[in-house]
Image (cartoon, rainbow, N blue to C red; front, side, top):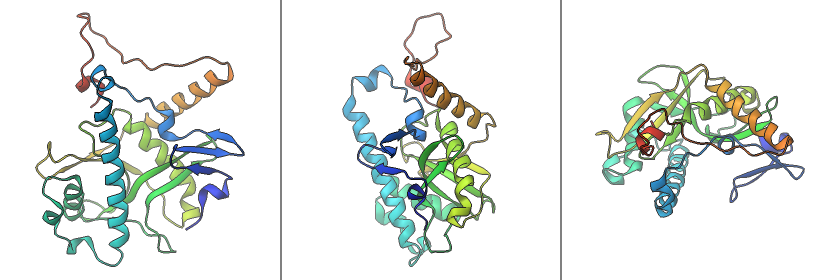
Length: 247
């Protein structure tokens, strides 16, 4: 598969999640979006760190499983052997129920953890997975996988940014363009099957992402700072609850 970052002169430091071109930082999709942290999380940083570790673990599992599936199909796996109630178990249940398969490039690479770059808007990122749920439809869907308790409200903008950039890179990868995007929420505590597929269809998502991207660039140019504050339209002065920060 083509080294997309090298084509555009971009380097990536995975430890710092930092992209650079000739020593200048390139804005990433997730780096552009606000992370809304409530007071409880601020006082329980170990919970946030644990959630981050879980997310990385699930991402590695999905990538390794889908690569292995090129030789041993997921249908041959026993999800219960992974531990009922685990996020790994939930992902296998999702794959078996929906008939999900990732796209495979002409060179044999699977569309998991792929880098994308939007050359006009000049932002970069790496999405989770792209493929088809054959038991649901034949449409190609770009997924963002969340293993958090709640789905962040920014996931719509996040996937829209990935989708627009991917479609500009699809030819480089030798893959077809995509029109659909969704959030795959893996949470066995919430769902009996362990997963829920949430379609993301707000047509304003990409425009909203671009607004954030441009606002931050303007702020840097004029040397001012931007801060994200949860909006509260009530009159009772109650603190914003986690359920209102996340959807």
